[in-house]
Length: 406
Image 1 (cartoon, rainbow, N blue to C red):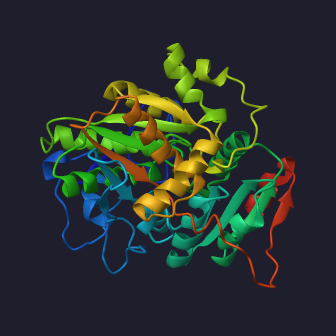
Image 2: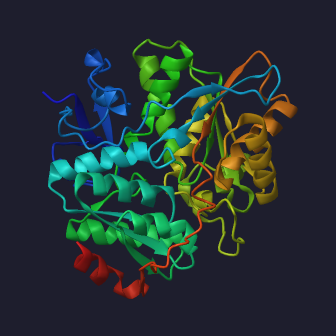
Image 3: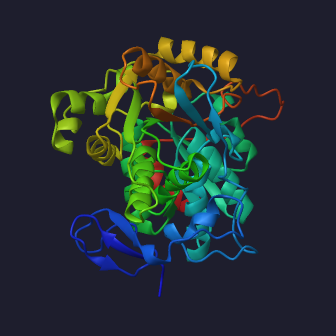
């Protein structure tokens, strides 16, 4: 008997088809239930795979597991916030420098189990780098699809890791939807980090909650997470929920989601009391200016409804941070904490400053902040004389290009 079962979050229908990414009946998103009676950690592994009994994969064979050592990152006591009980979950220690190694590790191991030959993602940042690295480790091809205009210095690591690069003249949210449609229609393995893209990968970020529980000995009072697509925040909330159901923790953290100020749909949704995703989609971000917090800049986060539900259920909140606030916080954080973070992660110390100053987080409460990504990739300079190769693909020709790459 498997340690997990797959079901539709909309109609609750069970499925046993391992390669299914959406409900075969109603088309709804897939979720997972686990045999909590058998929940325990596997001490053969010193990385996130010690939690495999709460992940939607077959029991891993240590000799065959595709891993670069992701997970098992440190929880550091902050020294930059005085007497406040602030801890930093330092995900920059993952193999490619971000928390995205966790979901991509699940996705690539699932792809290998299905016999896939190529892993596709829509990304010009951390997800793409993780996918390229994990796919290379597994001996798979990787294809990265991105919107036109990503700086070559940012995407050079993808090229260096062997990923085939497609640049499409379309906005990121429309591009995600198009790639999902193409991959589902033609049976291509999509590893992008949204539930609609790949529900399996979405469980990887839960392991952050398990590690914090082990490192802190309990759940914190607050958990602060940068929000791009929304999947990481909702996954961490699910992880703590499972620990609570198991009886291992007696309280749940309040979740705080932090967005870029020009792309703050979820903050607006909380402020205005939106109840449906249609209300959020009606917000127009088409004229929003570019942001240095590019990895968080979704007008309508693909997993935003789940993130909204998590924040509301936890009694938490959303807030937004300007580019100037994020950049100022990035510098202060490096000088106070010794961690060089990317601008998109600068929203975390900026949010902490505000939450502490306004008394939202009090000195007797414990808060954990997710430090998602390292800054070294953001200041990468391509000094090689070898040119980066990428293909400009018209949006109408994307399907043909992906099928040729598979």
